[in-house]
Length: 197
Image 1 (cartoon, rainbow, N blue to C red):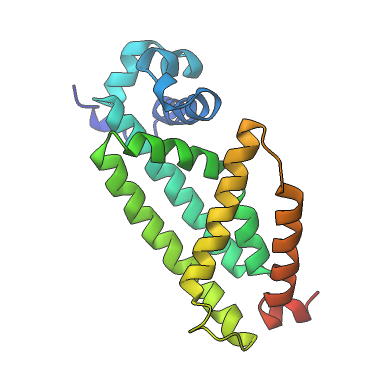
Image 2 (spheres, rainbow, N blue to C red):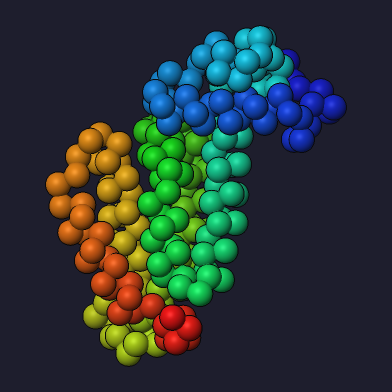
């Protein structure tokens, strides 16, 4: 059954289902996000899940797309921040990183989810790499020896692994890693940003 045109993107029930799915995924993992569990979390009848989303994959894609667009908007804000590298680090450490991990696990079983993640990650990574490139060049870093794309991947990956490990209760080396990153960000922040400190 396809959702009617009146049940468009702005429907409060549809948004409640998207939010509930994200919450279930964060709290219990993607496998727990069944139509019954999502409906209970949203406070609606289970039939409404399939009224708005013909399949659970449609619902998962809606959650992923909404989160990705929100994350891209937050990334644009971070890039416009007085301290963009610091803001990007904070963004990569947000709870959205945990939700992305759930989607990455789900992507092992769903090709369409995998494709959507690749599209999103490409857009996000290109913008982040451009900020890292500007900062490195501004500080005279040899970008052949330290390619900005590699530095961006290292920092983003470190942020994600810290989020994942914290969710499991693992904290070994986290304080030291965070302090190291803070020192590097302070050192390599864009010069015009540092001048405003």
